[in-house]
Length: 453
Ligand code: PFF
Image 1 (cartoon, rainbow, N blue to C red):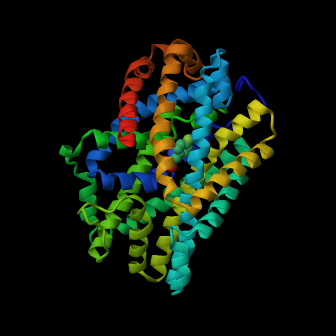
Image 2: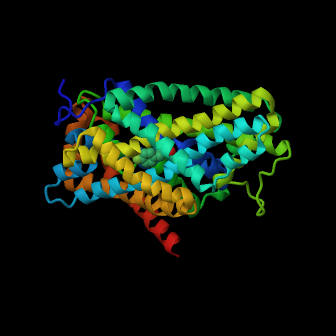
Image 3: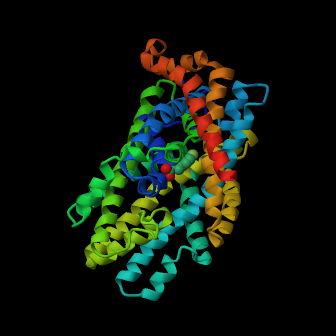
């Protein structure tokens, strides 16, 4: 069966390979660190409901759009938009994606580095080496951040160097099931502890009065980040997809897996916070709200693990931070793959050289952030909260009004005979033309106004 229009770039070996790689991209810090934090920050289950709506009615259609553009052209985001729009204007969307990918990766590496440092911090703290533990556990420790950022980048580049099926596909096939396994074991344990039932109730009982514009903005931003949308990661992964594979069902699987893992991660983190509370650990800030942001995962949970104590506490804490690190790794490879594929395709640079050049540039920015972690918030504002919805909105507009949904459906039909007549495809075409760009547009404008105000 023919692969992409650009043979020799590599393809996923199997349908499952693509789904796991794309789910690996989607499932990351955004699910295990970001989602529970946002739930805690935004009134529990009310957030989950709005988040679900954003994922299903905006995220899924945009994901289908990105994969279709990638598979049609067999190119990186810049090359893909160029191929579909010879005027060159569309390529701007691709360049924006490449830039966002590099910038998001640079702060993502620093946070990913924290997960590795915390593995050591927990081991030292359990062995009674408090001085060592506090050095590794200090989030603002520049030299330590820089070292772990470099280590994490080396893992990422190592996998990317292996190429599409031997590197990315092979790694995600092992890492993803392992990740789910650790997550489930940990939940099973945490739910046996005193206090977890209150957490489960807080997590699952929605208070609809909390739904407002701010909550909706957070949910939409979280959906884009978590599903890896708006910067061409799924265009790039779609470009390695064989023509006989069904884009609609693959995208649906990836979205569902991402939602489920985020939900399960919340089921671990929120009850764990209430277990910590029962044990006397502070989980409410001065304002009476649950502690959120960075502190949630990196301060409350380690204290809980220390309270559990003994070798059980150690095994649980090391598993948790390894889990976070693994999830981050399968996402960071997709963030790096976008600019690397661009350099390989558009500048005819061999893969290893491309990953070293791009990896080197990103590392310089990441090391600067390592020494000034306050920059993370600014990067999140610009490249994540503005950048991804902007990229997603432009992708919808491009597909619907420049390339046209009819052409996209012809591409979709290759792996899904009869797609044109299906209600799913027709609904998708309507959403991508009207509903998605309008909804993202509202969120985008409001986010920008909030940030500059
Ligand atoms: N989806 C990843 C997460 O939830 O952590 C982050 C991410 C990866 C965002 C790849 C964007 C991207 F292209």
